[in-house]
Length: 472
Ligand code: ADQ
Image (cartoon, rainbow, N blue to C red; front, side, top):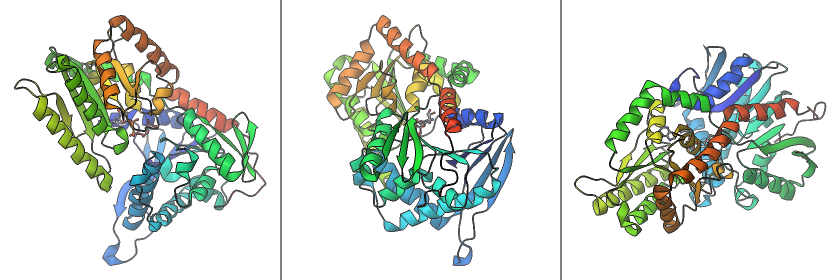
């Protein structure tokens, strides 16, 4: 089988537990083919003595059978590429937040420069029949940059975040350039059928693409495959974590601590897309509209620090802290705090225990590509006495986990009513809903995701060979 080369902004050492299911799953496929994982080292190099920084230095080391190769970025490139364009333009717009986007003209040049740097550093490492799998919004133009240097390998792309409807996408200055970049791949994968449909509508309307059927398109004089490949979790890995001593100990400790009360849990990166202030308002509404929940329900909200050097993130931090403070101030008792809010990351090994001890999970993003916390919560439950998932209809996961209690996170009253329903749901109904969701998580796990994406990519005929590659 041809070798797999994965490219993503960050590279994780798959041998470490903290790396998570995605790294473990990718590492498994990479190991089977003696593969290579390429990305940014996480290191930002300052220019010496105010001069221009040199080319990013390349580091290489072997992690078991997988070779990890990373490149440093200079300050200017990092700020324009990572903070500026990726997280100041693409992240907000792709999450439908045009109001938060900063279309500073300088960012796009930095974004392109780093993609060109990646292409230059990666190309010499490639073998002729390598299959390349590029991940996420940081690297949309990478295939086109590789093609410009003469690379003829098969290249697939997976977008981990949502793709907005055409008219939102079209608000990005240079959106046509970005979409041409997407169309340089042999296969483009999305998290949900809604995202896939947005892409199809865009290329039909804005680029005159012709539908060839079975996920194939003729666009910009070449053939492209596109489809929905919803990402899953590594169910076995997560179950093993739940059964490991740390997972069990966490579960027992939480059960004991909250034996008199029902526990609700939220686990997120602190990001405006995750709908944390809206969730707190819904919880406050629950305590107001259903007084019996006072003193009997506690919400543990873990929000790990994220992108703190992007300004929209410090705003959300203050808003959340102030909401949690006012809920605890208004409703708290001497022996009961309604909200326990922690601004930190929980060790991955402890997550299953926390999920399993919780009666309800609140996964209520305003917009999310998939949301793996929803799936992890389902998998961590005791099937005989499972907790209930309250899930935003705007998470990609809602297309799959239809037996969750689906909510509109902007509607505090309706969300509070759903949380109340979750808290009082009879055992039989909890079991039935959990069973179908668990089956879905098992069936569409991370291995299914890898296999189905790579299966299509490997099959995709290199129909473009011999004709010029699309140039940006
Ligand atoms: P993220 O937005 O980072 O990823 P998500 O899917 O919610 O989001 O979580 C990814 C992982 O991070 C999960 O394994 C989760 O357990 C862990 N995690 C989140 N918050 C944590 C915390 N506070 N402490 C410890 N661990 C935490 C992007 C997209 C998602 C998509 C993923 C994968 O935004 O929509 O599901 O990629 O494609």
